[in-house]
Amino acid sequence: MSGSRLNSEIDRRTFLASTAALAIGHERLMNSVGEIEHTTKKFSTVGALEPRGKAWPDYDRVIVIDFLASPGYFNYPLNPPLNESMIANAIESGITAVNLTVSGSDFAGTVQNIAGWMDRIERYPEAFSQVRTLDQLLAAKQERRLGIVFGFQDTTPFEGGLDEIEIFLNLGVKVTQLTYNIRNLAGDGCLETANGGLTGYGHAVVERMNELGMIVDLSHCGQRTTAQGIAASSVPAAITHSGCNSVARHPRSKDDAELRALAEGGGVIGIYLMPFLTPGRIPMRSDVLDHIEHAINVCGEDHVGIGSDLSTTPIDGSDEYWARHREFVSRRINEGVAAPNEDPDILFTVEDLNSARRMELIADGLTGRGHSGGRIEKIIGNNWVRLFEDIWVA
Image 1 (cartoon, rainbow, N blue to C red):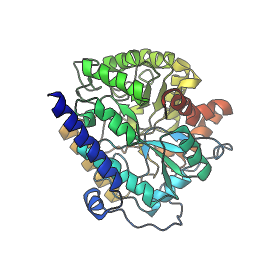
Image 2 (cartoon, one colour; image 1 turned 180 degrees about the vertical axis):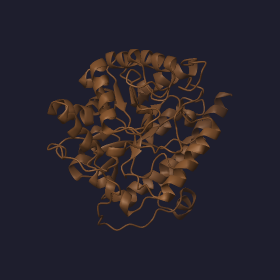
Image 3 (cartoon, helix red, strand yellow; image 1 turned 120 degrees about the vertical axis):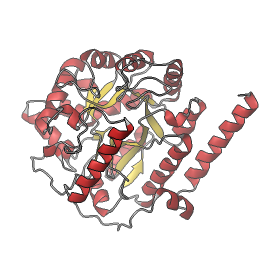
Image 4 (cartoon, rainbow, N blue to C red; image 1 turned 60 degrees about the vertical axis):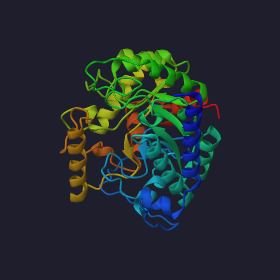
């Protein structure tokens, strides 16, 4: 592509991104992203099937970060619109901020996703705020709103370019996973048997993300892509949502060598709350704690956090939810993007953490196993804060 054509394409994409961002709230945009249900400014707490547990006494005082989550239903087909219950749970969760996946399959679709979430944040200022900086994170905590950090779970929105990275950063995308489960232009995902590692383009993406202050996420990446991504990054990397293969082997989880290299580079592993923790059976809180404790033993307490891969709204267990879950998993299996052990008959949750206050229940569980308050603060939030301080340039 000639220089003039390249510049023209970049200008077009910048204009598209700017136009979409400015258009939030307009009727035409809302017709394209789906109308959000009306909610009032007063919310009641909703938590169907919520397990009971002791409150951790310091929970409401500390910064709590779930670095892969959503206020709406997640891992669920059709992504139903936000309603009063979802917004109530987001507030009552006590979570300070989440890494919200906004990536689509291409540039234009991703811009539309971002614009839709900008609109939601603008519509419900009592509940949400966008977080791009540490100051905004601290403000979200003080104002008791759920801070939303835009993130990608794939580099496909960049469409093979590098200038697109800065465009999305300017829209608030602060973390990007290099691959999903399968191969893309940046490298091989965890389900690729070839295990081909990071490509030349992938190296260029990591370099540009480092320059701009965008967190490099290696969660769904294959073994070689993970190892090479950690080595290629000049700043600490992240594995925002995964588990420990030494506790239970699964392609979505990581080996000790990967965890150790991540920690040596200053990075953070977020333990997920998914069935992959215990392939073949329903995971419980004790299983989550086992993975957290193993990660602490391998990485040290300064390099472990939580990335649940869930919604702040607990699963209601209704017949409709089960039907949608089975539809979602079956579609992923048919498309070849489902990880092993994704089961239509096992929900994406941890049974006794199916609560808006799940992070508090994790903190309480760690207390019960003898971990100090200072360590727990790191696990449920402060380690992510330190990573932000290391990487985010603005």
